[in-house]
Image 1: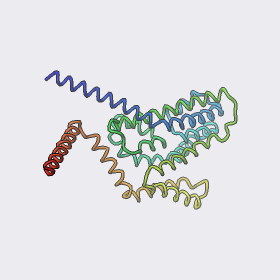
Image 2 (image 1 turned 120 degrees about the vertical axis):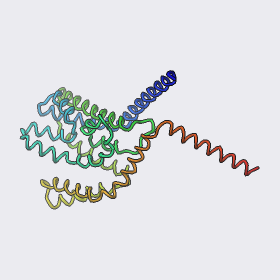
Image 3 (image 1 turned 180 degrees about the vertical axis):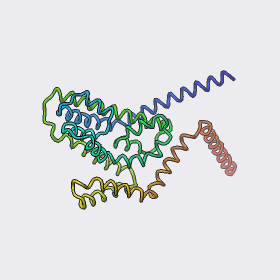
Image 4 (image 1 turned 60 degrees about the vertical axis):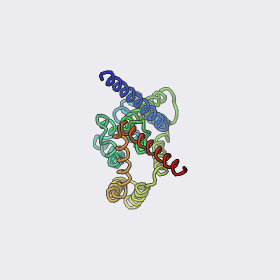
Length: 287
């Protein structure tokens, strides 16, 4: 009996280790497109920061503690321009208020992630969000660890890029004009990618229409806050049309996670018996 328990324990440990390796490998492969983008964008941020007189230590510190992508680009001008804390706080809210919508979408996915949850909330970026919302994961990939390692890898790419950019900016002399447009280009790419991946285009269409209308009504300087309020109202208004899809995905993921190996074996065994019965029946009919 003790020997059997030991064998089961060792088998479970080996299975967990195998799942962890599979999860890390899958997260790494999934993050490769983000790595390509973050190394370039992080480098651009490091170059801009260095051009304003802040060395690679500042670039690394900001990327570790802020990790906000576009807000870090904005922070370069805030730091160099001597902005007040209130102005910096308001600008941060305006630039990052889109995370409010991300948060609403991720309530279900991150609800049971345990100790990983605080970091997952902190590390949620546009690119990580797009990957976390991808279709179903393979059976040998643990969903919670996938979220964690994917977020961690993406931040590491950004930190590496920002340090390389600051170092390059200190070693080389060149014109950095236009580098900050890289974030705008990235958002366009993310929008197109999400449009192609999902059949539910209502949030994207609502966001574009509301933003254009607010731009025409309030002007270039004041349209951002009304746009965000309008988009938030639209999300709540159309929540009923969006929830069925999210609930189906969450239920499917929960069913896969809670299914034990015994259940898997039993269903396979029953399917095999059913197949044998069908073959026997066919043989009898033929005879």
